[in-house]
Length: 440
Image (cartoon, rainbow, N blue to C red; front, side):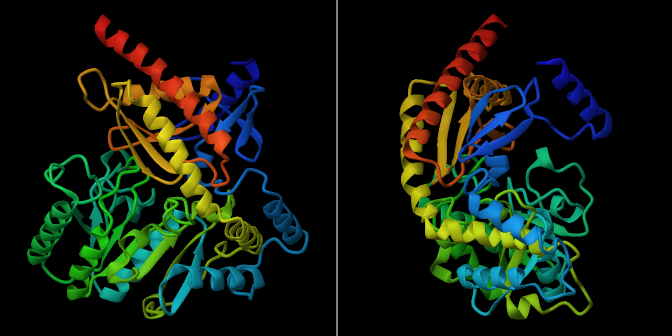
């Protein structure tokens, strides 16, 4: 690490919270990017397989987004929702149509955390209840209310909450009391557990909030149709379904535009939340909900920065590019190549317990020689991948899962190159980790 880089690390740590994590033993500053590559202040070029936590959805420095932001910034940067905004209305119209929710309305926020906060406000107000169902191993943001519905202890710093949260089985397919069951029996068991839970709850429950594929939880998910089975139960009780699409939206899974569409047999959710990829790095999020639900608040509310002219202009350009270039189809095709190459390369590596996910949203779960979850393995793999020129993420309830989520414009050649680098990193990780364990 250069002296300048060391000084920047020291300055960062002096003025930011101790719990604000940095990746890598020698933290990295990214200075610019293009396509699926980024450049660091260390002078190296990296293939980006994490996209700023699934946020650079289409490509770095996408010309359409850059132009839209510059054009709008040259006219007016900010107005607030107290004034009309053409780009905000145009984006809302497109999102309402794409959502699959009938009679939909849209409220814009600045992040996924704020979007989930808003959805919880709507649901609890509409149902006059502070009881919420959430999935085990879930993550929905870092605010006080969203931490209260997070089923992942690694990301839950407090047990205090304005909500009473009840946690449901189903989003981790290969662990837990139902892991030994086939898919159909697994869904039946999780649904029976939900029914039993609801029979013991006092008073109405506001909503179930769930990620179709858990992000921070390590890209885990239950069988297709799980939330459709849940929805049939929820509907009988009048309970709302909120689909957290912050990481699964915009076609990243390849098979569907929204994650909830893998569970569509009982109809769409009552609301969905979005953020991250829509802005391609711009700070934008929001809620799409049935009009009756969206309009239920009985007090005034606005957003100072949600629906900003600049962010909605950039997001609209980004969304149009994604649709016009069928990046969902690309995620399906290239994601299949990426997964096949990683699975094939990792077959001889006991450090890899499982490769899972869909499209360009893949998780690689790592274990030690005894087959136990290993956060140390994930940390080593992150370092080795960087050394080889590949940036990836990590997560999972025990910090032992690599998160692979490149921009949706990833080419086949880049997928093959990235898979090769990842397998090399995993091979180095296994040799280092297992030799250390043997020495102990």
